Image (cartoon, rainbow, N blue to C red; front, side):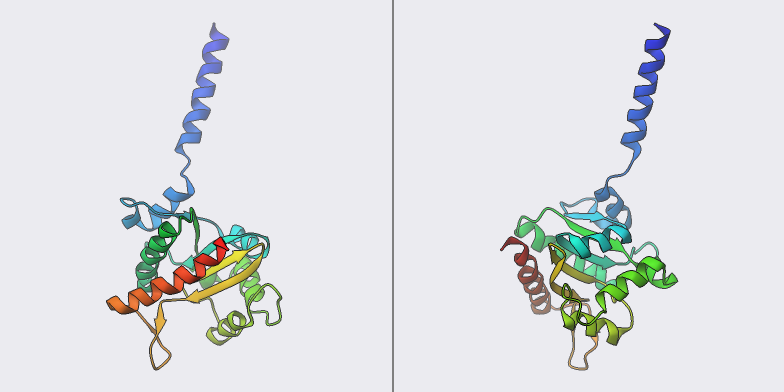
Length: 192
């Protein structure tokens, strides 16, 4: 009987530990608290999983900043639009990566990521992406990728640019619709 009780306590203890682990959705919600109350498709991934997805995977990947660490008004405006598009297209997941610390510290993983994406002539990366990254000298957020079998099909940085080639935010209704359509066209590529 004593062995059964110990075994039961051990099983319950393991179950409790397992249930205490946060899901990828909950990890995202800890960063973007406003999403806790709504249906969303975001799951938080680390930079290593992002690199793996870029090189061999498929799906939608967004590099952004955790607003609890660093403000990103562009991210705050873009992520809800991405979510609307994904739900409309019945896409289950957008992988979110908080890139702030890796970019700030120029981590080894960030260097690998940046070098992979900015390598002009990389057959899996559109040259325009590489050139834009080289011009910006860093990954600008939000930075969205649509990937299929390790090949980048589409990419979009921030929201929109104005006539002076500067990123803008606080979108008007028509600008928001334009961003929605950009994401819609991008995300639709996964369904072809």
